[in-house]
Amino acid sequence: MSVNPLPAVESSSPETRNARGEWRPPYPIRYAPVFRWPLQLGAMLKWLVSNPGFMWPRNLVLLLIAGGSWYLTQPALPRCVHFEAGWIGQVYVRNLVLMWLYYGAYHLYLYTLRRQGTKGKYDARWPAQNSRQFLFGDQVYDNIFWTSGVALLVWTGYEVLTLWLYANHHIPYLDWARHPVWFVAWLFVIPFWRDFHFYWVHRFIHWKPIYHRVHYLHHKNVNPIPWSGMAMHPVETILYLSVGLIYWVVPSHPFHFIFTMQHAALGPAGSHHGFEGPIANGKWPTGSYFHYLHHRYFECNYGDSVIPFDRWFGTFRDGLPDGEGAKLAGEHRD
Image (cartoon, rainbow, N blue to C red):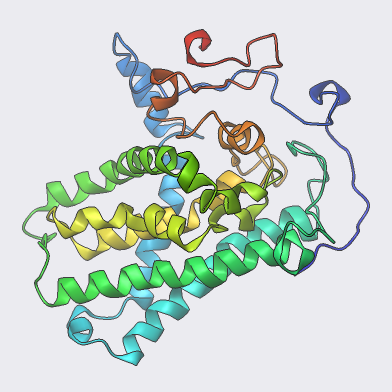
């Protein structure tokens, strides 16, 4: 799916772009009010229910997608006792459709139709074409191959193996009817577990011997697009999606596992599409300038904006212009 050479409509004010043509918000990046001291319960509760906030839109939308796919497409657990083509194919097709709908929607709106123009686009350039840096000479084709080809297989492989383990009682199972409180609590814990796991895996793959053999592939996308989210070396994908292995030792329901895997596999589309929200006529808050800065500068913002690991370990960049606050954790602003 190549990007046609449509005319770019520049609808951002010129003051928001630097000399390189990069757009930035006129305010510093802020962490969620969760790990501040002293505790600010009012701010935390507001963040939990506000728009945008913890629940809406990202986590609740992904939870609804997981719930819908569970009830409509999930093979019954007794079918998973044996590895059989029928239910394995069902899981694969389900994941393929979800990936194309979720990633494809962002790409269609922002890059094929270019409905935003370059309003809020961090890098004013469009995806690279005729570039030796990418497979097929095209960033879009390259990213689609790694995301919906390779990463999709790893994602499906994790799900197939874990469902087989659940079906054969090899890993602990949590019955939702007998433990409703723990069942619901897990749903709130999952996004925090994702952030925790992502930070430490991400720091590991930035270790030079691993970076130059594995993570370099993802960082070809200095100007990321939705399909860049899972455009990774297979080794990185295996490490990244190992977030679901916690359920091999911690009692849980298979739905917790499916939600975690879909959160990890679909979520990167929204953090890599290269635009600051809200988009769609101001109706859809999305985008992650926090993570875009990581692609732009490499050695900063390894985590996400909930658990402030980067602030704690001195790798935080707040996004303000150089010399005016785009510095590391010690000079973070609220």
